[in-house]
Image 1 (cartoon, helix red, strand yellow):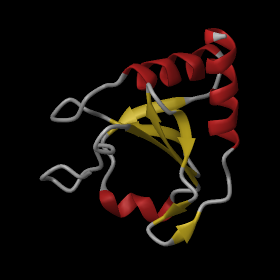
Image 2 (cartoon, helix red, strand yellow; image 1 turned 60 degrees about the horizontal axis):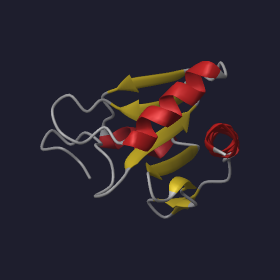
Image 3 (cartoon, rainbow, N blue to C red; image 1 turned 45 degrees about the vertical axis):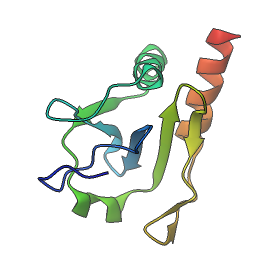
Length: 107
């Protein structure tokens, strides 16, 4: 979903994380959107394991440079996105690492 300012917010029932050449990031949700439980767990796990992550405004036009993307939801956990806007995404090492760290902490 996009905000009225054409900034990425997330899915209808999920938060979104993206990675490009600058690293891992997730949309700022100060104007709209919901900061989910899994979003907080992902941010905490990334910080704990030294994986840089930024929370910032994400313009829709930035999606063309995304190399990796995943959704989070308390029911699904961390789910990689295989195709973004018709383009396959092949990298998912961040999602795999975060999934492992979170599952290990909860297990």
